[in-house]
Length: 131
Ligand code: AMP
Ligand code: ZN
Image (cartoon, rainbow, N blue to C red; front, side, top):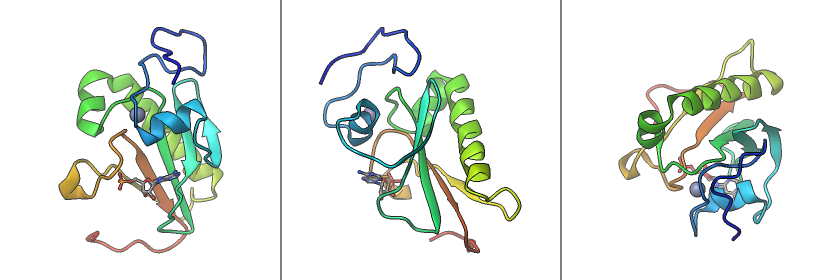
């Protein structure tokens, strides 16, 4: 995979992609995904195994393993991911009824892909507590 570390043009990640990271490959376009939104620093695409009528993942283009790593190293990028999650929810028509944003963080929480991602879920009534 081509290293793009240091690339400064819009739409490009600034941290080198991590080999064998599924979501870095989606950012690079090496694995297809149904993209619904993109900003300079993030992309949003539909989850391949949706758990609700709307299930979109918002990820930073830069590789950070999980929420803890992103929050401690780039709070501005975390804010952009959150804003994009809200924009996606609005674009999906979830603005009135509401939606859920989930960051599974660590194996105990069910995280399976270690490139931080926000799940944006909506279109049905959500249960609480989550399973
Ligand atoms: P998590 O379990 O919180 O790490 O979430 C990872 C999510 O990535 C799961 O909901 C998967 O269904 C989703 N996923 C895995 N592979 C793909 C893919 N190629 N395209 C879209 N979503 C994917
Ligand atoms: Zn990655």
